[in-house]
Each structure stands twice: as C-alpha cells, then as structure tokens.
Amino acid sequence: SSYLTQLKDYIVLSENEPIVESIVVYINQEAIYDWSYNEDTNTVHLGSVPDYGSVVEVGYNVHVD
Image (cartoon, rainbow, N blue to C red; front, top):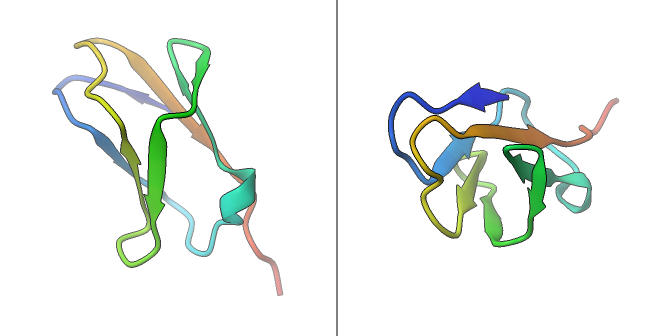
C-alpha cells in the first residue's frame, strides 16, 4: 500500500508479471474499479487522482514458474 504524500494517478507495481485478472485496487479501504493496467510500464493507472493523504492499496497475484 502507499500513503499518498503527493498527488498522482498511478501506482508502479513492485512485482513483474501480475495476473491482470487478479488485480484489485482500494482507496481508503474502498474498492474502486476505474483503473487500467499498463503492461509495458507495469503500472496501474487510476481513473482519477485520489485526495491528498489517501491510502491506496493494490493487490494482485503473480505468475510463478
């Protein structure tokens, strides 16, 4: 999770190759669905900028060899 100390509309995922269908996004513990995933940058782009100080959490599963 990230505690926003600056306004931004994206989160770079820490793990590569997420299972896109497993991605879930929460802002202040509330699920949101207005987001997209960019495979080239491994980034979740939010549909709007959360308020300053919002807690943004992104959960996902990854492919394992």
